[in-house]
Image (cartoon, rainbow, N blue to C red; front, side, top):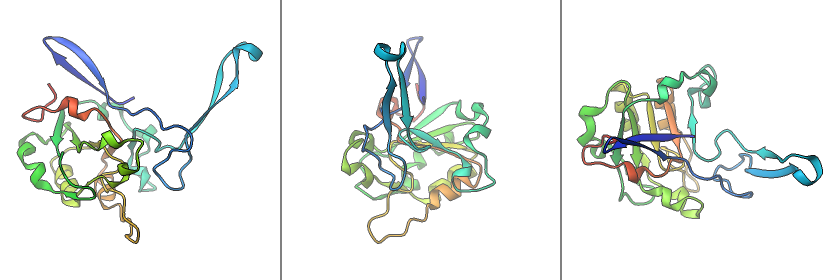
Length: 207
């Protein structure tokens, strides 16, 4: 589970950044396994409840490790968990039209905060379309953004959309350029986040 710990009036709280899994038949990634949860044992007949789960490694809210695009890259199990723990800056990138490109101008106000150990989460507002056809029309970030963040020492980025590369329209060839730039630098990408709007603050830092 991906979550963010905040502190308000010295009272810590945890905000869940994960979506519930889509019901059987729902998958945004063409060719990927469809999530299913099937009860195979029950208290009535087997003295215990047991379910069979079917899902792909990129089902729902998840992290992409370098091995997603690089055969010799680190896998999820190779990652040091400390990589996924650290101070968070939430970039307010709401208001971009469907399939638009989010450029560095949206990140520039937060630039002094981008450094090694900082996790950057991109709030597009698209999580409100989770489970709906419009979800695949989210905006994408530019390769320049991925490069600049990696150059600054940031090794984890996350977005409340299906992919920082967006989803190509019919006839467009998917290049996964953002994935290849950031994962190729040893980074990690979190996708399908939610509740990032709850973390927005004036200076980007999670309170």
